Image (cartoon, rainbow, N blue to C red):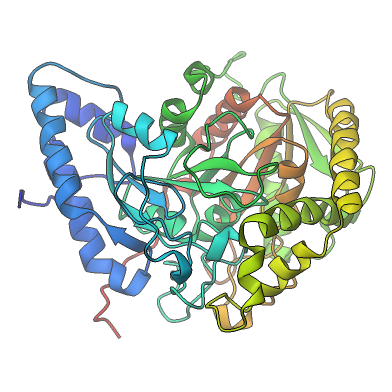
Length: 467
């Protein structure tokens, strides 16, 4: 096996720095990947972020990346950089479980399109991460394959957020600098918020989902996790069908970060039930925009957020039942108790209800395009609460009140760290933009993080042997 000394000075939380160090010859990919693998070995027994680790393949790929660099061949900013994938993304010859023991022997025949793009960019895939079974759940729990730990609490097992739970934990804990998830109703943004990192959900269709296990073909989208929006943009640029959209430079006006930007905020009635610490962080985030020159406008929702959620659920559950609903018929099958009733409910959605929901979605998209035509960004809390203990989870009350809206309406969105609650747990804010405006969204997110420091704070780590 290829080995290299690990280096404590390697900043796995900053892809921009890693990439620059590689190009200058100050770092090697073998050193970076070896450090990532060492941190996984040291911490993942406790964190339970990874479902599979490809140590030998990753080190071999890192050595090949270094040889290319020495020969003067550079494939871009992800060349030699380790990445983790949610375990519903196919890699040829590897098992894709979709978070379920039912798929423990499901070996992929070919790689997903996004895997092909990662390889072409020189990225190093170090492993796959745990997830909610069939990607159906926002708290991040998995009864049969284990629930990753939120790294911000060493004593209490708190929710990591889902369904891309392990992908968020791996980045938050500093095991890898980048990871990929999927988002059907908040499955990237919720775990990003709970784990205190950046989680970007692309507009559906901007990133090819071929070779990715579906939940809802209408609402599914690919998302990326990173410490910062700048790093997330680098990964998005590799994955997106139009790579140029991720590198739009933020426009400046007289040194004010948000001059000329029109930002929408929620009305008070749409903030009912949000924890006080999150309310305070939300208002503080809006003040960052205001001080930067943005114009803040209240957006009056044309209907309750719950109405949007009901329509999204009808689409998601009925489409999910097509692929997984039959599994609920066998009471002995290892289907999570939180997943089984939802898939069963999906089998009971009638054709008329499904078509009506799709038509409702089209009408609401048009309505919302008009409503948001006067703003560039809609800012909301990401979740109503911070991460809660796993044993307090109520699966009938998913933390997707603000995230699911964006999937239903084909918007792009990002969750950014925006503070910490009285327990020291991360708080996220969500910024949403109309479909196809991913570049503008990334630019806004980057400017926000240039004006704040919350994304720079990381949880302290511990080994599995600690009390």
